[in-house]
Image (cartoon, rainbow, N blue to C red; front, top):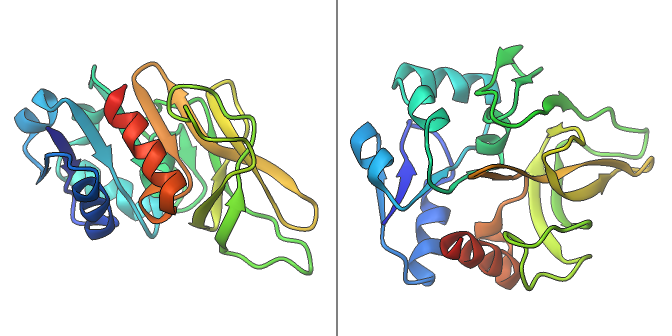
Length: 197
């Protein structure tokens, strides 16, 4: 069973629909016992990272997430919350990934948020098994995690082609800056890989 962490924010419906299409059993929950006993955990997130962290801490689920020993996947803001800190709200993250989250510094022709389809590269096996380098996935974000030892996929932004972490991994924790649940067949493959880890 997959536990989708419910902390009153996040892209819950699209994640639920994606899991259902894969035939996966899931539960939307804020119960620490259920989250700890689940086979997999998904931490979705949209919006303001600092506010999302505050909402997670208000439910006292931050320590539950940090202590997980089975595969856990943070999506978009869910991934950013797992980093060391974020400049969005000047907040401390969960400290799982050794990355800092900063706002894009756009060039004159760039638009923030970075929204739409973009290609991912330097893919590590595991989460990206069967996904060719250069595959396109769907992004919606104004903040990004810089490259770090935990980076397992990269993407580029803007006219300066600034490289950032499209995905992160540390031990049993994974994160995608893009939305696999909105990324068509490529995203479906990534979610299936996560369920099979």
